[in-house]
Image (cartoon, rainbow over all chains, first blue to last red; front, top):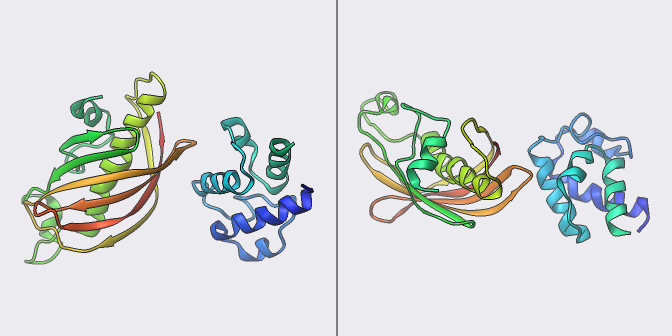
Length: 82
Length: 146
């Protein structure tokens, strides 16, 4: 799966948890979940669980710690899918 | 872990401890109970001359059983930890209130685990009164650290 395709699916996953809607509309690889999208840190767990379901992968603690922005999250997903 | 052991690990004390006993516990669910004392501090103000247990206190009771007590147990099953200094934060609630709970009433809380991952516990909770009527139901989530 291409990085763009993963990013598009990730955008749908994070949408319900986003509090900064303008930054969400302009989502890029650099977007930070907490600083830019203003997602409640407790909801990052829900993002990760939704990623697991969407891509049928298992995220471990060390992966979770990296998944703070779009780029790092796409990379973790790509690695799990390969 | 026994009921008294779990309650001893909770980071609450009077007048803000709302767990009397843990009656059932597995990896999937917990059942506990509490009796709201007629002398509790909040009845004086909620409401004037018409004491009814505040919804936030019912939610707190459900969370102390369904998140804190259940979380202590689940952490104890994961690793051999002392758990003498656990840190808790409730992170979301979505609760419906169906019936009033009056001073002196005993309630039971049943929480079913939706997930416990990355130290976040999310549960579907129900509270019943002595007549087994449903008084509150919904979902609560929180983060628990050993």
